[in-house]
Structures are given as structure tokens and as C-alpha cells.
Length: 395
Ligand SMILES: Cc1cc2nc3c(=O)[nH]c(=O)nc-3n(C[C@H](O)[C@H](O)[C@H](O)COP(=O)(O)O)c2cc1C
Image 1 (cartoon, rainbow, N blue to C red):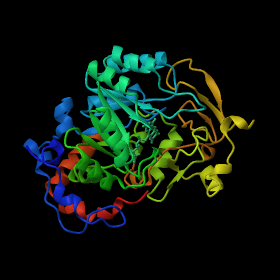
Image 2: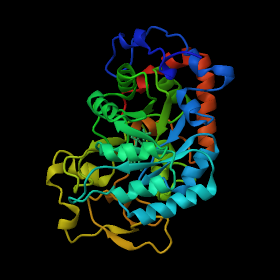
Image 3: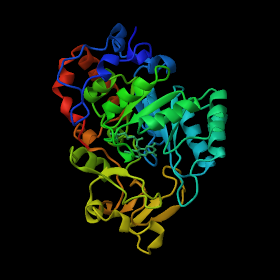
Image 4: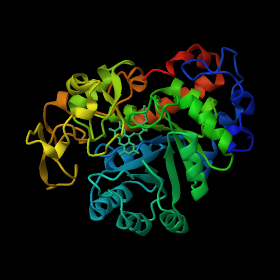
């Protein structure tokens, strides 16, 4: 085994190649990355570090990635990540217990570090819950975790990953001593500050470090897109939108169907949702409210500053008896099976590049296995990679 995914031999020849407007390298046919075809399986540094079968990580999506999805992905041979929404540490602990009752395999928790209405959704108590339950991977997005949290988690045996939308953020994370980077490209759904296409960002972060795994996030939703990410030097893929359209995802059925029906041009980056996070851009399905406010997002009302309500939902989805709350307009609540109201007014994170590759709602385990087995076959025949090269820049 050798090659970029081991961190022993970065793809320096590819870094020098010019990129087209989609962030892809030129037309020259590249050689297959032999490092991912060990013994006819798809092993990378990620699979070896974690002892998992596939270099597949399902994104820790707030509201949607709850224990059933985490368990299904980890049991299928990938790594399931729990999405920690703004909820108290004791709710997180209930979810961790449920996951550990359902799988012995590696899993993780994904935390948002963006303050909301001046309050931080992730606290020292959340970190302590992860330490107490010996969570194998703890990932952060939206800011840098305090160095003390990183030290505490690592001392307890957790791996700490940070989602980086740029090389600058990746460098800050590396200086903190993190164990992995998630390259969040501009195609990625949800909170997204990136202006760099996914594959270009993978190459950029790969060039920054040989010492930790780099995962590719944004627009990866089938075997071909996964193969291309590995080909460009990623050690694994971090998959969001595709997993919303899984049986186990805690997403509203109509939201799942919109992802199945959606295509490359059907998502937008907007600040019209999560107005309590000023300036934070989200990639979402283009629905009625996105269309209505395009070009004047800054004038949309703050969720709590209006008496209007667009529906109801459970504050702690999936927790029996969790409080039922009103949904204000322009909030970042994502429609779950607990939600009632008009989806045309709600935030539905989704990537167009991913939606173009999604044909149906499937069991999560089937998605993992089919995507990875197809990626393995594609990597054995690199012609398939270049033929599809222009998918990458589509939102
Ligand atoms: C429903 C949904 C919720 C998300 N919530 C979070 C979140 O809570 N924290 C986070 O770091 N990223 C979140 N993301 C974004 C992902 O981390 C990731 O960057 C993205 O899903 C990758 O792009 P893809 O959807 O094309 O796979 C969310 C994505 C979706 C679809």
C-alpha cells in the first residue's frame, strides 16, 4: 500500500494541474490510485485507523442524523455520525446510549460551534458526555473548538475532526492538533462558507497535510462521485444529502421526496434561513421562500421578531415526549416526521450536485454498500472518472 490516502505520498503531480471552471483538472487521463484497491477492497488510511470496512462517513446532520441512521451506517461498514442539534447534554446522552445499544462499531458526533441568539449550542457538558461515553469520533463545524476540549477528547481516546471550508480554516485546525479534516466544498448542503469546489479543496488540504485523514464533503452521492473524491486524494467521503433520502433518516417524507425529485440546479446558497446566525450561508433546496427573498435576504425578519408561525415541530426530534414548539419563519428548523406545516416556507438543506445523483429513498446500509462497491469498480477503470468530470462545479 502506498499513495496519497496513506499520507505517505501526496498527489503532487495532480496539484500542479490547471483547473477548469468546475474545479476539475484538465482532460489528461490519470492513473488509478492503487492505494485504494488493496486486495480488491477499498482501504484507505481512514479504514485502517478506524477498523471499518468502507471509507464512508455519513454526515452528522442536525435533526436528521439520529441513532437509527448512525447505527445503520456503522453496521453496514461505514461510520455513522450523530447530528447534535442545539439540545441539552442530557438529550445527547440519551442518543449516545441508543447508539451504543445498537452497534459496537465506530461512530461519531458532529457539533455546531455557531452561536445562536448569543448562546453557544455546544458546551463543556456536551464534551463531557462524549468523554463519559467514549465516543470514537467528535467532529466540529462552524468554528474552532477550544484547545482544552481537543486535549480532553483526545486524552479520552476520541479522534477530533474539524470541517474546513478553506485552507485557512484547515490550517487553524491542524495547529490545534486535530486528527482529521473534512474538506467542505462549495457544493455542500447545510451551513456552508466555502467558495472552493469539493475536489479542488480536497487537493488543497491534501497538500497541507500528510499526517491526518482528509474527507471530501459536498456533492458526493453515488459511487462515481465517491471514486472521484478518493482519486483526488481524499481518504474517505462525508455524505449528507444522499443520506437524507434514506429510510432511517429522521427527515419529513416530503423533504426526502423533494431530494429524490431534485436536480443539479435546484439548490441555492442563501442567508434567508437561520437569520439568528447573521451572515451564515446555507445551501438549501430552492423552495418558495428562497425564491421570494432572493436578492434581499438581509431584509427577511429575524425568526423571533415576527408573530407569524409556519408550523409546529418537536424541539428534540426522536425523543418521546420532546416539547412541541411553533416554527417561526426563516428559522433553521429542518422538517422532520414530527413537523407540521408548509415545506415551501422551511429550510431543507440539500446539494444540487448530490440531488442529481439520487434516484430513490433506500435503506442507509444499502446506500453505503452500493456506493462503495461501485466506487471500487470505478477506481479499477479510471476512464469512468474523466468522462464525468464536469459534474463537480454544479451546486
Ligand atoms: C439536513 C442536513 C443537516 C445538516 N446539518 C449539519 C450540522 O448540523 N452540522 C454540520 O456540521 N453540517 C451539517 N450539514 C452539512 C454537512 O456537514 C455537509 O457539509 C454536507 O452535507 C455535504 O454535502 P452533501 O449534502 O452534498 O453530501 C447538514 C446537511 C444536511 C443535508
